[in-house]
Length: 334
Image 1 (spheres, rainbow, N blue to C red):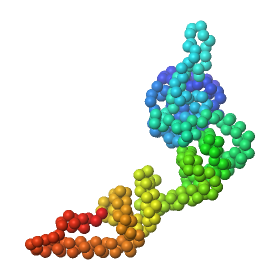
Image 2 (tube, rainbow, N blue to C red):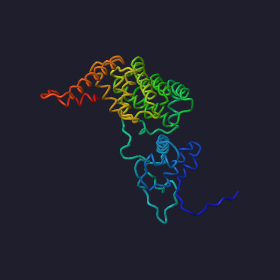
Image 3 (cartoon, one colour):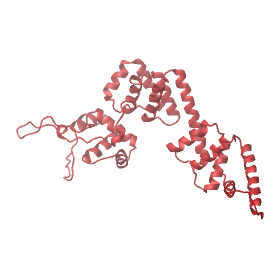
Image 4 (tube, helix red, strand yellow):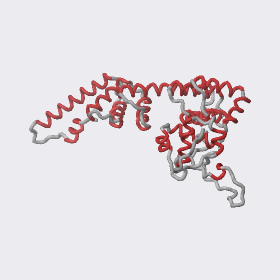
């Protein structure tokens, strides 16, 4: 079979990729690498690479981590130790190719204490760790059963990092993995965020972890009910989640939140304003309003005062003692 390369714009690919890593790299990892090599001299973001390669941003970060571990991508420019001359022996393409920096913004540089992404560990090293430690081997088998698939390199490295760096026992890591799988959030960054929080708060026993997972499950259930009530198609933003967590901490019932939701829509039209709705709920909580019956009594009192104020304002009086600012407040309680 004869194949010829069309002479157009080309770029170099490290020899080690073609000879040793094609069978180890996934489809997404190869696509990301080719895109990075093609745009080696351009500033790139994870979002841009993800959009161009038709993969998720998590897949981009996973690919960058894989190629960094394989010493194909570097986190800083590499200065060649030897410059080629006419008399120097010819070097392989991998020795002279300018390696691009990973497609991450400066603000996204890994932090040592909060991420496993700076942990340099080849897949062969991960396999050796698992083979040497029976507890780790059992943890990995159980984690893959929970995920329903083999773990990728980033996930595997993360589990080892949580065990060796954060000091979490394998059974605690499995409890975390089970929680994340159950709630469809089996993602490295989210899992490590919880693991770091556990380590900082001293949540390192089976009892403490079970209590924390129970709390998080209740919070996610509460959030799910709010999303259903508000007919939200996407997960709440961080600011919206703060409001929701605040309502849960106040112990507000879903019936009370629904009444505040209806009042918000009546005032704001079809647009949901979390800040306006929160204002209603905070006012009710401060006034000791805890049930729908309390709201109805409050509304009845408000409309009675409003009607009395309107009648008094309309009556001809020479020396009226009514403060019109109070009337305006009654006209708009929220």
